[in-house]
Length: 311
Image (tube, rainbow, N blue to C red):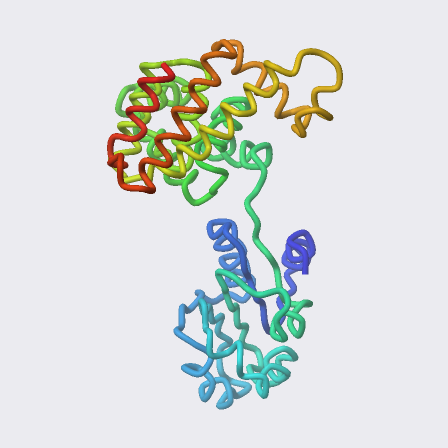
C-alpha cells in the first residue's frame, strides 16, 4: 500500500486489522501511528512481539475495548507462516489493530510477498516537501527551509529536534526565526553528521579553501573518521578535475566517461588548480594511501600531509 493510499484510507477514518510499516522516516511513521490510534479512540500500546499478545488476542470478546498494538522488529513473526493468514484477515485479533514496524525488509522474502497489501514504506521526504513542514512548524522562509532540510540530511526526526532548538534560540535571543537560523549556522549549532562534513571537506579542498579545509578536517578527527574514505573521495574528485581541465573542447563526456553534471562541477572546482598541481596532488594522494596500507605512514597524519601538499 502506497503512502498516499494509507493517507486516503485514514482521511475516511477506515482502519484495517494489520499494518506493516518499514523505512527510514520514523517521525512521519509516528504521525500515522498516532492518527490510527486517534481514529480508534485508544492510545497506541508498544509491545515486544506478536507472541506476547497472541493469547490475549484469542480471548477477545464483544465487550472488550479494542487495542492498537505497535510492535517493532519482531523477527520471530517473519517465520511464523501458520498465523499470517489469521492476522492478515483480522480473524485472529477481532477489533484490535496491529502495527508491525520493521527497520528493513527483504523484498525477495516470502513474508514481504505475502504482506504487500498491508505494507507501507516510509522513505525520506524530498527537501521541498520537508520545507513545507518546516515552514508550518516554525515559520522559516521556504528557501531557507529547503537548505535546513538538506543540512539535516532530510531526516524529519532530526529536523523536528533542530526546529525546537531554533525556537528556543529565537525566544532566548529575542530575534526572528530567520535570524535564529543564521545564528545557528554561523555558530554551528545545527548538528551535521560526519558524512555531511566529509563532502563539505572535499568541496573545500577542491575549491582551495585552506582555512575551511583544516577546520572541517579537525572536526572529523573528533569523531575518529577513518581517513581512507576521505582520501578515496578526494582522489576521485581531483581525478575528475584533471580529466576535465586537460580534455580541451569537444565532447568531453565521451572522452572522460563523466556525466554532464560531473563535468560542470569538476570545471567549477578545477579552476583553482593548474594541471601540474592536480597531477602532483594525485601522486601525493596515491603515495599516501599506499603508505597507510603498508604501514609506512601513520593514518592519523595522512590527510594533514595531503592537505599540506595540495593547499
